[in-house]
Amino acid sequence: MKQDQISKAKNIKALLSATITVLFFSSFSHAAELGESLVLCKHNKTVRTLRVEIGTDQICRAIYTKQGVDETIGSGQNHQSCHDFVTNVRKNLEEAKWSCREVKEARTSNVLINSED
Image (tube, rainbow, N blue to C red; front, side, top):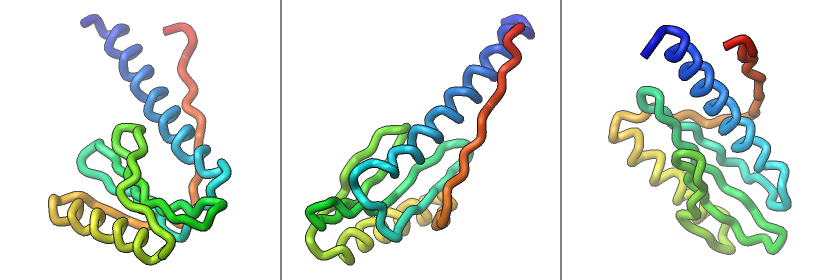
């Protein structure tokens, strides 16, 4: 690949990464209430997230996000059970050398790409 093609590919990758992050965090403003748990896990450049959402019906859902796709890993009326699901998956990831931390607030930023590329 030529240098300009490599640069363009890197810019597209950065934009895609930023877009996924924005879409992920913007999903929190939907009908379900976000519970206390939001865990961000990283390994090299790969990111996984774990969170608990409480629906309007007061049913909790433990959600695991991998490559931008949400998967419900547990649900129930007892909200502690959803927190337990998140804790167990976090423990498994950390045992596999992932670095996890709780996220208290989310901020987003914009990636600007030079339009001349």
